Amino acid sequence: MINSYKRSNVKQTVQNIPFLRITFALAIGIIIGANFNTKPLLILSLLAFLFFILVTLNKNYKFSFNLLFGLVAQLFFIFLGILMTQLHNKKPVLFDKGNFIAVVLETPRKN
Image 1 (cartoon, rainbow, N blue to C red):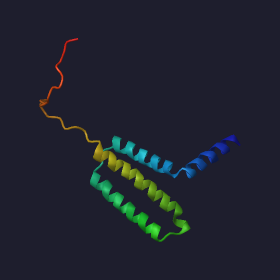
Image 2: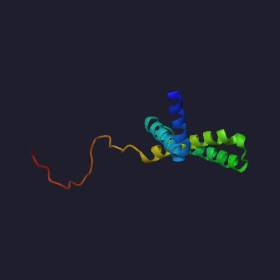
Image 3: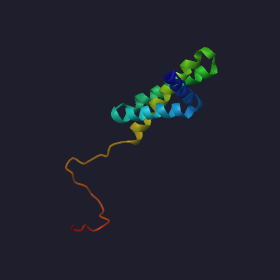
Image 4: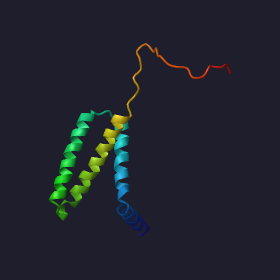
């Protein structure tokens, strides 16, 4: 009885806060994007395809498409998180020999 109450309470919370679902999908996408290396062009084409499906489902709305629309929207935000991670978290390019040109702003001191 208590376990059933907890499940329904969590389900009601997620339904009442729609941004929570979007946030979870973006977080999952960011985690996937940080751990796996993908091609941004592939992810961008998937995003365009998913966006086209979302627009099509929205124009031809029927109640039977409700689950499909939610699933495609979640996949859209997951792939958006992957793309944003791939584009904005690039590793620095290091020189092969380890030589750098820099400006020293403070004089080094001995401890």
